[in-house]
Image 1 (cartoon, rainbow over the protein chains, first blue to last red):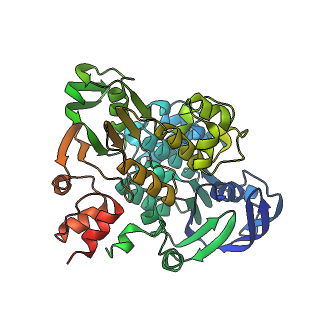
Image 2: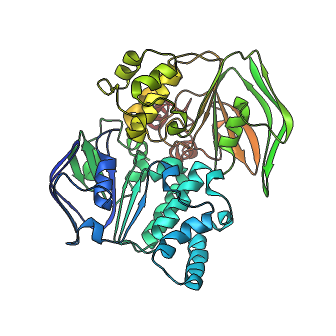
Image 3: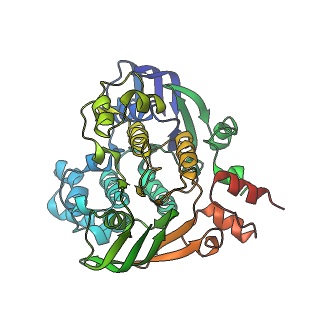
Length: 223
Length: 230
């Protein structure tokens, strides 16, 4: 369980929030604090006050994969293969094993055809797929994804959801502006002006948002 | 006013894109898979990238604007005030329209991506152009903002507007559908007749068509009307 208590950081003000294992989507208006919350969960930012524990550990003591909402800010190396290999190389995994795992992981993420390409020449969606591959290759306990699906078409977003489940990450926490995608999550958190307004299963949260633009179109159309 | 693509082709190693057709006045929506060449085509239409072969004729188009997929690639000012001024528009008016009043001295790249996209689109939409190209204009916007931008785009009735997107939920009123499939740009024609042939149509639209409820257009109102039709 991820437990958040008396958390304050910038706009964000969360008294108490528990997040169970599985896929959790954070939704809400632009500027409501979604990215701030994700950065705190990933251990990139330290709270001004309060506490976050991931299975009783501080976020910085948890194996975490992180994908930034600005695709270019995820890139450290030139080629796709080097980028995806980098988390293993930073951990001094032997070269042969790194090479074997990169080959198999690129195949798993369906991006083998991009392996020798320069990341800077890729499309926005391809850059995100590579960033997700790099974030997931070292089998993190926690995967934190900031609006990755804003660069993916629906079929690729659905396929990626399935692959994310198969990574074995205990917690997958993402923010999204695609409500069809949010509806496929195990649970939703709706933030507004830094506060958790709704928290629960997709039907519970969306029932409170039925008259808003956040309600999934397919649900509104009864499809 | 029109854009004529005459046997346009661009290639890179094993990848290629071919395009022929005419973009007339109205709003065009172009869809395609990841890496199919949507951004490449948008750059060619804007005149920022030369095709390997073929020609792109822009007839009677005097003013043109392209909005890149990544709003951060447009930023030239070190503050929001400077950024707005760089577009030749009044910062106070634009910042008020996107709820960023009070952040005049804030660095644009410290905004959330959604806020930056909102500001960028407000700067783009503050003027009218003969040719407006929008590459993924809805990405990172929250649902309310998507709705607002779609309403603004639906009111845009002059010139040529070309929207490249894989958005599945919020659309403006659109006149023509195109898609990139099998390495070629294909015209699916004018709405609503274009919809049954649209391979990349959102799942909701495909389900409505399967039910026999062809929407008149792509706005939420049109989709709801089709869904409620008996």
